[in-house]
Length: 148
Image 1 (cartoon, helix red, strand yellow):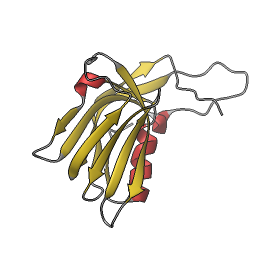
Image 2: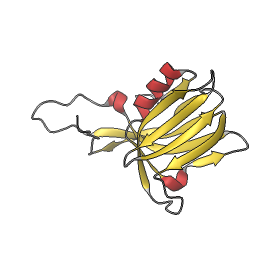
Image 3: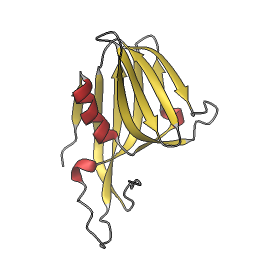
Image 4: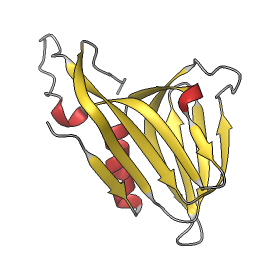
């Protein structure tokens, strides 16, 4: 499948980007906040849900694919974190979702929700987010699964 490049400029777009980022893994030390540019860069290995085959009852799960990608969030005014230790750059984070919290339009906050009750909350002027694949995919034997 071709590499994706998605842009989000409103809450509906952000939900689509969030779905593509679900279960992405990254090192905490790879997060890059540029306060002067008002930008957060999130390099990640995302699970390619768009190529995943549906699970079949009682069948072995088929391998999935991961892709090296970068999530770019612009128009950032400030950032805060919880559950992420800045002294542990090797910590692996699993991104669960991007959530929009509306403020005084068009501003608000974007929350990056990670497994293990970790999160980053960005105060933003408006939604301006881009997800870009950087290269070819590779096969992964494990497929993310969540309790219902």
